[in-house]
Image (cartoon, rainbow, N blue to C red; front, side):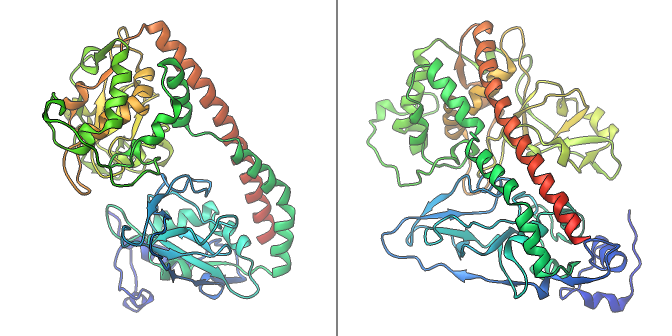
Length: 479
């Protein structure tokens, strides 16, 4: 238990009379300074202003709705996905217009998207959710300079560890952000910084253009190996599960289906279970020899367990937050369980090469990763665990099958529940059909995909290197 002393008079520092200890550690010790040793400071509230403008929808027009979240804006600040929205059909939270000089930053802790300026998009087409703060620079401050200030790891650390409020999907108040103090930099120095990083920005932009998403790599390789049109995946309608979120097809889907052709396994009556596109994908999969996942596993597929959390750095807990569909994000883990809890729930003990699937929640359900280390870890109950028999099936190949159109359609077809509380049952996952091909061919396909992913990782590392150079130049300017 942490105990913090604070004066009653300090409570008025927060308009909401916030009482948690981490807030007052920040207020009493750091005085909201981004850099403790800096004296010539200025608060964000004097250099940034909110600039919320309600978007004016027009009849019979389609727009690009951008919610918060890593599946819409990546960690480099690029829009990688959007929802097609109209005046008649859009979530109430998708409502803000931006300008090309606005700085936007997510208020949600788990969104992981940085402060960003979209200088090159058509702002008449994009609409942003109320999960973003939309800001503009005041006089004598450059918006792009402030964007880089807001991207500093020091600021992210201050947000993550001190001023988020709430549990679950927590967020911070704009008033808290605006209290933060940064070094007071002249406009001349701001422009000098932007001039010095121009070449590096151009390098990063060129690297961005060479990037290919992992799911596109998998789709290209699989379409070649299993002989289907690689554009088929673009016909999959955006649904409730993670794998469908890259689709921009969110239109109403109608078709005719006779009773005799309904899903014969479960007599399911949902459109998704009997959709034409899914039947086409299933036909392609069954055109090849197939088996079920339950034929290639060491033990029954099961969910993890509910962890007993501890502040000690004991056994890391793997939960939905740390599944990215591009590798388990072990660097962000801040939640741990006790050794006693770990030893009690043997089903939750994760092993190297376990496949982990998020089994709950709209848009999160169906995120899939593979554990690739021998570190003792605890799978939370929101994670479904698949442990393959490596003598029968390559776990990495199974991972790619589940991320491919073959897995996407079965996950979307199998979930149960409505609204945000959808679930994926381990028994249903055991019944998924997968290609029955030799281990040698599996290894060949895995190697081809891995080589292409490695190339993309090298591009990502180059981007990170250039971003770190920009960060270093910024720190030299402000100190």
